[in-house]
Structures are given as structure tokens and as C-alpha cells.
Length: 257
Image (cartoon, rainbow, N blue to C red; front, side, top):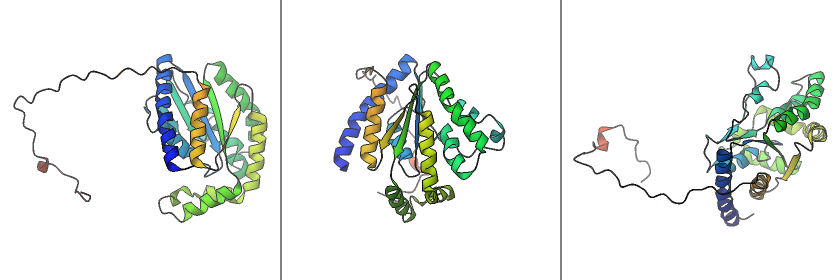
């Protein structure tokens, strides 16, 4: 998708996202959006585009790292429950409790018993969320192995992006088929009427982002509650106040004019 067309449509959708944010806040909704997919599928970039014009006090991102030693002794789902939204909030999960059915399964970070237990528990957990009034939306960003390889090679030759290639990413690259089987199993067992999976063709990142935003907006009926332009009050007169010279402070050097 051409950049000019992408940016024009994104600008329009950002206005709608602001309207949705206001509706969520006003109506006290609780919204959870899960983003899963292959490494380099574009989860983080999609989330950044969704949130960049929004209020982080209303729309926040959860991207949990490796569990601590203490967290490893908790209920597996516990640290995700702690991140659930309160009234008037939307939470976007950049990877989620589905780690157990993906990376943990493939890499052997959980036992077979733990895997099968959570495979059965996940739909019931999500049923509990929905029954409690949470709006739960789940996206799987899909790319094929050729696209992933191309993006990995691009990251590897770009100093700005090489940090994205973790040892875990490289191992995942080597285990494409194992991850495919784990994904297929996950989708089979956890694609439910109350919490369906929505698959996104993420081959083209720009169109994928626009498609996700458009779909997300369609999942929550909302109205525009934006206030009309405000009448700004007059600025306070100086009344003899003279600001100190900027040279009296530690000023950042002007490397660029």
C-alpha cells in the first residue's frame, strides 16, 4: 500500500479511535484486545499505530517480559489477571496468556500436563472474562515463512532494528513447523463463540494496520462524544514579571539549527 494513501486513511481512522476512546471512558467499558502472531508479524507496530494519538491513561499496552522466579510459582494466569482493565479502560496485550500454548509449548518451558491443562482452561477463562462484562477481542497476525525470513534479514542488516532479533526469535525461526502445529492446535481449541479469533493477513503491514483498526472500531458500537472547540480564556498579563535568561540554565546544545 502506498504511503500517501495509507497516511490519509490512517488520519481518518485516528479520529474514530479518539471517538471510541471517549465512548469507552464515558460508558465505563472494559475492553481487552489480544495480539498474537509470528515473530515479525507486526504486532508491536500495529499496537503503536492504534495508541499513538490516544490517552495512555485510558488505552494502555501490556507487554509482559519473562516471568520472575516468584511469578513462576504463581498460578500461570495470575499475572495476566492483574493487568485486566478497570471501568473506562482498554488494554492491548502484545502477546498474552497464549504464550503457554505457543512459545512455552514449542520451547519446552512447560510440561505436557501444564500445556494440556491450560489448553482446556483458556476457553473457560475467557468465558469468565466475557461473562463479567469485559469485551474481549483476539487477533492473530498471519505471515508466511517467506515474509518472516525477509523481515528477519532486514532486521539483521539494520542497526536500528537488530535489537528485535532475540535468541528466542532465532530459535523460533528454526522451528517454524513446530510453531505452526502449536498455532493450529491453539486456534482449534480456543476459537469460541464468546471469544473468536480474527485472523489478519499481515503480509503488507500498512494495510494490515488499517484493517485491524477498522475491524476493531466495528466491534464496539460507539458515538462521537467529542466536545465542540473550547473558548480559550485570555492569557494572564505579565504584570511586571520578567523571565530569567535561558543562558542561566543548563541548555541542551543546538546540534541542529
